Each structure stands twice: as structure tokens, then as C-alpha cells.
Image 1 (cartoon, one colour):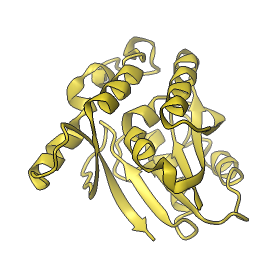
Image 2: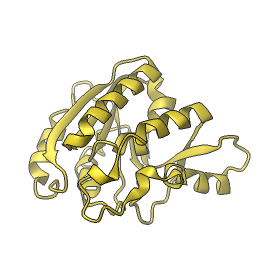
Image 3: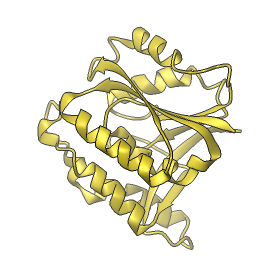
Image 4: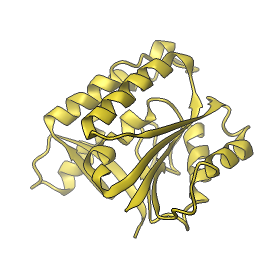
Length: 210
């Protein structure tokens, strides 16, 4: 069996974009690791609680690594972040899949993380990018359906976060309190797979699948 490696920019990115892949595919992997590039004090306790919930849901341990970078400064610290991330990978085990941000994301921190992860493209077996509400020209080709219980668990985790204590310049990004943004994948999916019976979806883009 191979390993699964999530590489994401911020606390809350996992619940928003990667939850479904973990729930549906965790049995395919020997080890699961979530690597966060940055930390932010008001989110730390929430993420720790959500991580415990995720482990309980799949009944297994998830390895968690936070590289401790400052939010909104990932581009400035690109080389040190790259070194830190690459050093988390056990190349002796070799077989691993990467889930990370998409190159067309409009959040600069997300783009930095994508560009760093892309350096591992030739080594991984699957390279999959995730949708975020700030993506532009995102063309998903992989959808994961969530049943009602799974969707409500996802929403429960996301509802703990508060944009008013987020490190945001405008404070106008209320996507974490909007059901529409939880479920944009459904818009894509229902147009293309009308015979599949799920109410809620997450969408991804496969760049490599071996």
C-alpha cells in the first residue's frame, strides 16, 4: 500500500476542500499525513478538534505536521517552506499520492503551496488539486459525493471558524458561513452526472493518476 500526503496552506483548507477524498479513499493508504504550511492562533484549537473528529470518523490515526510559517508570507518564505515540505517526505517508501491546491487559485498562499508541491509531480503516483472558493478557471474532472451525514459533519467542522477573527484584509470573505460555498461541487456534478444520487459533492482536478 502507498501513502497519502495532503499539502495545504492554512488551517481550515482541509475541511473545506479535502474532506471527501479522505472519507472515501482512506482505506487505500497505509499512512495518511496532513501537512499545513502555516498556522494562525485563533484556528489552532478548532483544527485540533476537527482532526480528532476526522480520526474518529475513519477510525485511524492521521499524522499532522504544521510547518509554522506565517500566513500571507508564504511567497516571501518560498525556499524555506519548500525545504521544510520536501523533508517531510520519506522517499524510501516512495509510493505516495499528493493532494494540494490548484494552480488557478486566486489566493497567493495557495499558489505558493501548489508550486512547491508540483516539484514532487514526477515522484508521486497521483497528483490531485482541490477547489477553493477563490479559484478561477477551475476545471474539475473528479467528483466525490457526500451523503447527508457526511455533509453535515463537514459543515459542523467548518461552522466553527469565524471570518471576524481571520487574518483577512477585507473581512468580506464570508464563504465559511455560506452553504452555497460548501456545495459548489454539486453545480458541476449535476450538470454532468445526472444519474448519480448524491445531494452534495466535492470537486477535484486530477493532473496525474497512476
